[in-house]
Length: 375
Image (cartoon, rainbow, N blue to C red; front, side, top):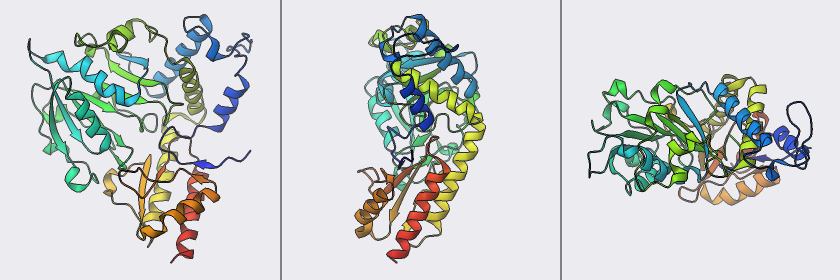
């Protein structure tokens, strides 16, 4: 079956073979030996041996894929990236705080999502804007050497890939080189599993699953062990990282089916050759689309070349009156969800791991044909 190409920013396209496997196991899940258990994953007790084996496999596969060191805990949680904007400061901000004082947290704002993170964290901590690219309309990333980092900050927060503005850190900043011993917190919701992670620079990374890892409902948190155990008294027990870690992500009922689906995606990533192979594919996809934009007279991308996102490519038609015709023609061609975020307009193509190169090539061919017809 030939499916349309779904360029949605999330929930996003998933590998077809993963969806087909899930469909075949919907009513009766087989274990590793192929033995059927008589029920689907959605019907399983989260503490039963069947689901416990699914969860353990997903965690172990992810640790191997992302080369996550043993001194980091992998937590399967709920609430999405937006909830983590509150959960992170409730867990980490008080780590260095004096009695009776709010903990200090520093933020580098490079787009809408890091803006939201700063605003939410201000409810629980003494937030500080260490750097911002708002003056450039979020088309670049402030040089790390210019960041105003406080010596007493518990952590420094970045969003490694801004889904709306199409700005991406190509590597995590080295806070030690900047003279800071704060923990680096990374919202990697739309970057996770698309490239390797330098865990020596990261204290905590979190992300919603619905872009590169699976369906909505699951939130991934990878946290260094020494950052556990510092939660504020107001932190709900189910969101206390120490509690979640102590209970193997089973303190409350986790999003079982989303974990199962993520595990299937992790297996698929291994079959593709792992993170190095998927990164090479992502580079090729992004280069193809950016080249088409940059050599066009109709389309434009405003992001500085050194921080363009591989995952989310916003672009604009120089003749805005053609926007609706472009989107209608794209849908007719089986190219879906290309409308840009309402806050910025234009178009946006999300090129997550499950988007094949053929989908990008089809989009490029359509863009070039549309431009010829409307020159």
